[in-house]
Image (cartoon, rainbow, N blue to C red; front, top):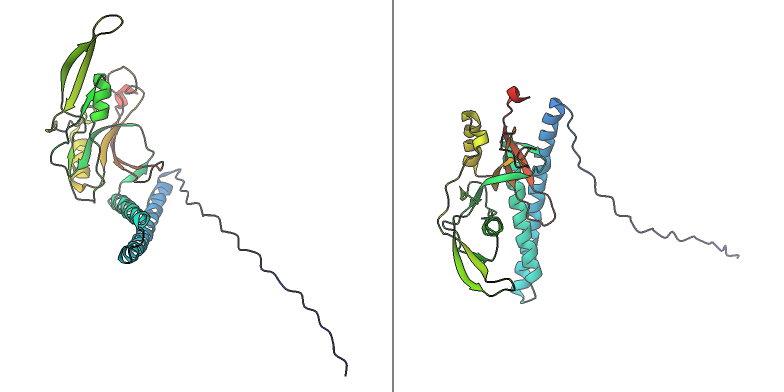
Length: 262
């Protein structure tokens, strides 16, 4: 009885190539496309909220297990906290989109109000700096809060300056100064360039939502120079991104244009 010898060729499976991350790029060239892009952004934001909820729950579960078993859990706790901050960012973004606010580029803007839950400012001081530099260093920063929490305050510090003892220098005594911020804040100053009743009403409505981390006014060419601020300013709301090197999201609130100047 003869035996048939059969040969078989083994099929080696190639490693799966990771699929490229799909691009989510929205383009708007007319009012209809702008409305459609706004709807798509709401869908995207809802998806990101659900995704970050899942990530936050997973990181917390891993953190709880590690802590219960007395394993190293510092990194897991950081991942959990970052997931919570990102979830908050997307929740506020979704809320702003659902309220009808449109996303615009992150224009350079003058921030006149930031949201915080601190009743008083922490006191800091800066020595040997110009007044302008001291204001920037002591400027109040917004706090990442849920929608509806905190209050808007003026970020420009209420400061006092005192002279320090002179020190000897090559060309005579050198003056030194100490700038300190006070605990009490200045009242919010609504931009004079936007002081129209309709725009002020829109600003008050946006502030009442307590969803934006900052409220500000976009620069134009006149604002960026030494000329008086007479441009056609935009009132904007901004939500800070908790991830470094990732863009914030800015929303359009109102705009004023003086056609008599055109």
